Amino acid sequence: MHTLFRSDQGGHEQVVLCQDRATGLKAVIAIHSTALGPALGGTRFYPYASEGEAVADALNLARGMSYKNAMAGLDHGGGKAVIIGDPEQVKSEELLLAYGRFVASLGGRYVTACDVGTYVADMDVVARECRWTTGRSPENGGAGDSSVLTSYGVYQGMRAAAQHLWGDPSLRDRKVGVAGVGKVGHHLVEHLRAEGAEVVITDVREDAVRQVLDRHPQGVSAVADTEALIRTEGLDVYAPCALGGALNDHSVPVLTAKVVCGAANNQLAHPGVEKDLADRGILYAPDYVVNAGGVIQVADELHGFDFDRCKAKASRIFDTTLAIFARAKEDGIPPAAAADRIAEQRMAEARPVR
Image 1: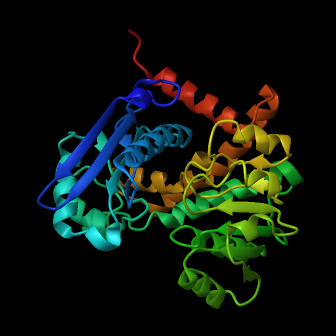
Image 2: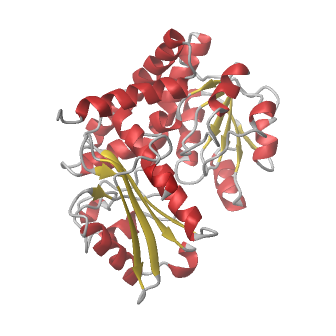
Image 3: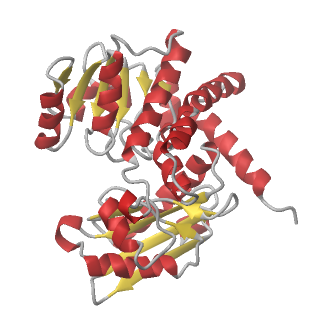
């Protein structure tokens, strides 16, 4: 409650705690803002250590979605849902249907989609109970896997960072470290290798690493863990593509890369990390800006999905990222703060005058 009503950390409009005893569902739906339109954000299915941790994650993620949607130019506010539990152990059709009924009860204030631990097939099930569901399969009227355009947007953000820092958007012969080669990361590797970048990868799942190495026998190598990756000699770009908090008091001082641009949400572990990056001369491409390709896709699904239209919108992440770097230089602030200012201005201007 303290976090929820503190506007500097939260300022959320609505938080719903959901429980269905018959299926074991325990979920949190957080709506941060509907200033720009219905809140839009994914459903994370994760074995949180406590209910408090789950609520905190939902609040943080929902707030991030408000800023992401604003910077992506979407007519949507920010929301997020988390389901508590190990999806490998407790996920069931009945549980997802129960979750769908809770989302439907909000009457369209929150539109859901996939996130960590949920997939297209899961959204197909949720949609049977809730018409405010995106990220569905093409067979069920959806757009399919949103990680394709998420990775493309990150790639565009990375090109913008290269343009700003080195005067050339090309990533050819740049060494890029990708932490997490799952849903989004392995697509990002495809873009990087197509342009001729050297890629170093790591993932907690050995099978994910092996699949990428098998597909790219040349130009891709692997290291044991993220600790080794961030210390890799000659790294030009670091791309965190797993869970949040990758940029912290431990990682930033030893990071060898000159650019950070990745798909993970909430990469900054706490306020002040963005200044630490700037002080070390590391250019940070704000995560919620560059990873917006997926939300651009699922938002488009509500209006009749068109891939080419979405890819064109995701391409604009290049220009948006450059604009953020320019604003940061003009205002003398880190890029993360510049992005926040731009997003907050759009949300403030959208609010009705009373």
